[in-house]
Amino acid sequence: MKKFLLIFSSFSISTIALTSPSFASLTKPEKEMFVFGLITAVCEMHDENNLSYSLAKKYTKQYVYNAEKKYLSKSEIEYVKEIALELYPSCPFPK
Image (cartoon, rainbow, N blue to C red; front, side):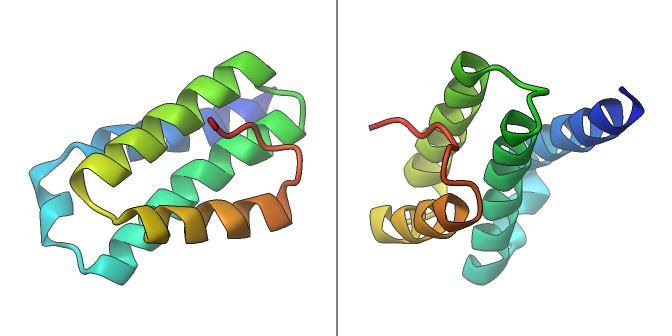
């Protein structure tokens, strides 16, 4: 349970940081790494059965949508998804 709370608190802080104005000053590779970290945190929590499939899918959908809308190109998002799926094949991504 403590591990879940630690991951979830990091996950929540990351979510807040994604909307922070300081995020805009990051370089493209740093933004990719940040979004990758958010997505893999969701995938890992789902993989460890600490996050249901439906909730994990909602989070990944929201992160992909926001990143694509504001920060990264569609091809960059697809690259991040591809790597995340190599690590966590059961990670729920929106179609």
